[in-house]
Amino acid sequence: MLPLGGTSGGLTCALHELLWFGVKQAWACLFGGLMLALLLLTWWAWTPAWPMARYDVVTCGALGIQVVLLLARLETPREALVIVLFHVTGTVMEVFKTATGSWIYPGPSLLHLAGVPLFTGFMYASVGSYMARAWRLFDFRFDRHPDWRCTAVLALAIYANFFTDHYGLDARVLLFALAAWLFGPTVVYFRVRHGYRKMPLLLGFALVACFIWLAENLGTWTRTWAYPAQRHAWHPVAPSKIGAWFLLMIISYVMVSALYRYCLGCRSSTG
View 1 (cartoon, rainbow, N blue to C red):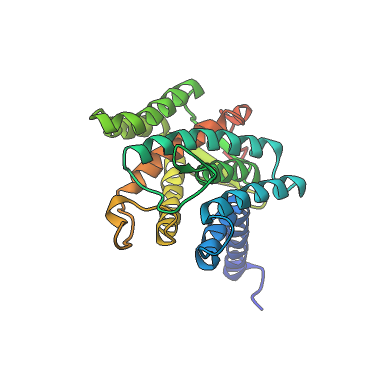
View 2 (view 1 turned 90 degrees about the vertical axis):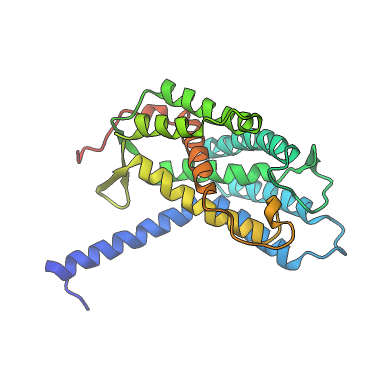
């Protein structure tokens, strides 16, 4: 057994904190992880002989997960509100994006809106759920955070750009620049066990965007949805999509921060 003092003790403490960091991250991903498991399970088990279409099974399963999490108090009412808000904003975007051919849902469903299966809103809600749970579990504090009104304007501009880019009005380069200007100085403090750690907030956005991109690859691999280039054979989603997820992360962050605004401008006592 390694002694608890000196270099070995420091390594032991670091590994212990890393373990807890992973546990908290996994717990923050609870809703999203269950949604991915539902996609995998239905992809593996569903057959046309089932009385319900696969997409409808996923929709009912997502609703069931939500009810169980609330009844078991594994999710707070505030986090449930985040999921509702994300479901609405995500579904609106899905209706537009599928109508313009950005991606398709190849399977049939009864529970849909304008051809978009209703479970899709829960996929967006998974991002919001993660953000809200991580905020609570890691007790976020911030230093040099921009004014919330400025971040709200940026989020609205990003959301609008997801629509206007189909009409030749694509301002994503400007939006990336504005995001860097607003959030570049911002540091987020997060508590794993007792003391606080810190990282640039933009780095946190980028890391989460990469993980969402990996989850998106899993979603297309299970034929839950497909991009036009994947209609005949699956291949990994283009890494350029990470940029789109980065921008979506900013929308997610601003929506969740609206519920946690009392924390903004605070920082850890560790400095």
